[in-house]
Length: 156
Image: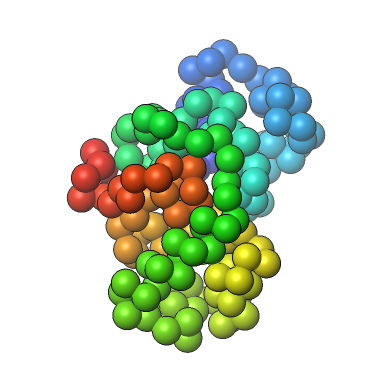
């Protein structure tokens, strides 16, 4: 299960900030931020990226996949072109069809096709599931870093 909410709260409290202050900094309402922090709503990748940037941490750190707060030479932006290509490459490296990947994600084939064809950025739950299943960095898959980091070479 994804648990970014606890990390968000921990980072916010460490910085001595209120939910309202963080929400204003990333351009959402306090109640929306609260929903994300308590994980009542699934945070969209765009917002997760904004929060990672605000606190200067990796998405992997927010997901609890590593204790490393940030990676060297980290890009602050998500690149849908890179993300689509890396997702497709990951699928092929693991000898998976789109049909098989959709089973892992409990999604439809059209969701996979949309990601691979750069129509939509991957959703937060799908990204987390892929990272856990294939032991790969979310920051790498999203194009925030260039080095292909796997959980075997991060302090998990």
